[in-house]
Image 1 (cartoon, rainbow, N blue to C red):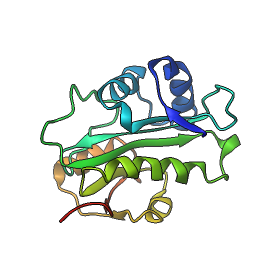
Image 2 (image 1 turned 180 degrees about the vertical axis):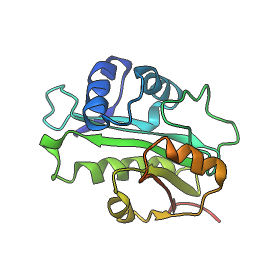
Image 3 (image 1 turned 90 degrees about the vertical axis):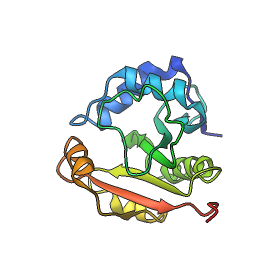
Image 4 (image 1 turned 90 degrees about the horizontal axis):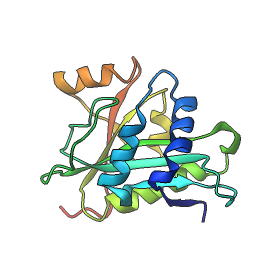
Length: 169
C-alpha cells in the first residue's frame, strides 16, 4: 500500500516536498508536526515505490465549519466543537504524478471525514478546483474574515466544500 500513516520522523522529507511544491506558500515544519500530533488519523505519507522514501503527503483534520486556519498557523488543539472536516494539503512530487495516487489519497481522507462530519472543506490553490470537483467539492460564498484568510493563500485561492456521503442529516 503506497499510502501509510505519517510519523514525526517523516518531517524532514515532508518539509522538503512542501517547500518544492509550495514555493510561494511556505509553512514551517512545526505546522506539519502539530497536525501529525493532533490528528494522526488524518495524516498520510506517500511511499509510491515502497522503498521508505516519501514522495507525497496528505494532511487533514477537523475544524469549525468555514473556519480553516490561516496559512502557516498553529492550531493549538482540535476544537471540541469542530463540525467540519478540513483537507489541509495533498501534495505529490511531479515525478510520481499521473498514477491516480492523489485521488487515492483524497479518497483515504474522505473516508476519515465521513466517519463523523457532514461536510469537508478545503482551500483550493493553483487553480485546482476542477480536480477537487471530481470529488464533489464546489466553491461556496465566504464572509469577510475567511476572505482575508484566503488572501494569504494567493490570489487564486477559493474555499471549497462537499457534503460527505456517509453523513447523516
